[in-house]
Amino acid sequence: MRLDGRRVLVTGAASGMGAAIARLFASEGARVAVLDRDAEGAARVAAEVDGTAHTADVSDPAAVGPAVEAAAAAMGGVDGVVNAAGILLERPAEETTPADVARLVGVNLAGPLYVCQAALPHLRAAGRTRGRSATVVNVASMAALRPVVGMAVYSATKAGLLAMSHSLAYEWGPAIRVNTLCPGIIRTPMTEYLFDPAHPAYETIPGRHALGRAGEPEEVAAGALFLTGDESSFISRTELAINGGTYR
Ligand SMILES: NC(=O)c1ccc[n+]([C@@H]2O[C@H](COP(=O)([O-])OP(=O)(O)OC[C@H]3O[C@@H](n4cnc5c(N)ncnc54)[C@H](O)[C@@H]3O)[C@@H](O)[C@H]2O)c1
Image 1 (cartoon, rainbow, N blue to C red):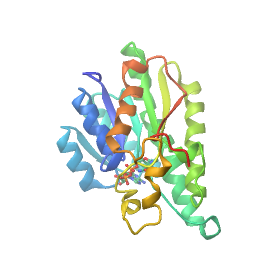
Image 2 (cartoon, rainbow, N blue to C red; image 1 turned 30 degrees about the horizontal axis):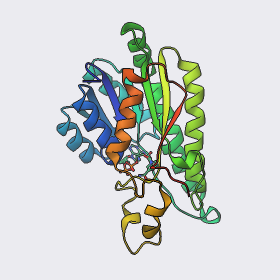
Image 3 (cartoon, rainbow, N blue to C red; image 1 turned 180 degrees about the horizontal axis):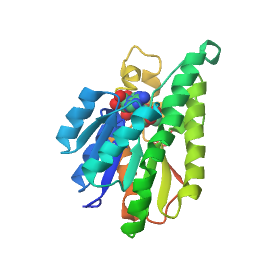
Image 4 (cartoon, protein in one colour; image 1 turned 135 degrees about the vertical axis):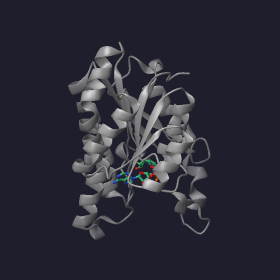
């Protein structure tokens, strides 16, 4: 039980990677709070992991604050946060609207900050009293390391999240370790459209990966577990690419 007694808030946990992270963390002994804008999905996953569900749009700090407080009250504190909530927009730059930009920045970049800010007193308290650093794991993307054509603003938000995570690691250490995951193409509801044989990207997926396939959400959850558990006790301000050896 690598997370025995840990209390972890997972955003975006109604679906995809966040849900896989919630399940894996619970199976490793953590108490889990599921935070998502999808109330029904959050309740379903929370019931599966014997955790609690909290509904909020992460881009709205007025909603995030009370949701994080409720999660902390339910778990008796917060030792860890995983920010997996995010949205994708595949759209040529010249067609990207101000509303698209505001939404992407609000959810993918500001959202993790608002969640971390709300959780900060709890993370600091846990870091002081439990003799180990509390943890934040932010789910960015391979697009943070190598921007994707047709996803200019998405890529920029994920690069921004990576940069912000580096700053937070310095600002909040040693009480809190802050690390980033950079997944490649992972099969979740967000990317399901790519797995339609009619989509032009479908046939190219195996050839784009050294491992010949896209990833599964459970393979990203394994990385989140490593960065949250004690096996990574001397790791902060780093990024872990989980991408099957993507090379184009
Ligand atoms: N799937 C991929 O290939 C891939 C690759 C790299 C990075 N990512 C990133 O991984 C993370 C998880 O993506 P996924 O593939 O599991 O997607 P997903 O769509 O299956 O899950 C995303 C979850 O986030 C929630 N969410 C979205 N906006 C929200 C908001 N404003 N407030 C609260 N909750 C919100 C959704 O309701 C959903 O439950 C995202 O940040 C995504 O950008 C995904």
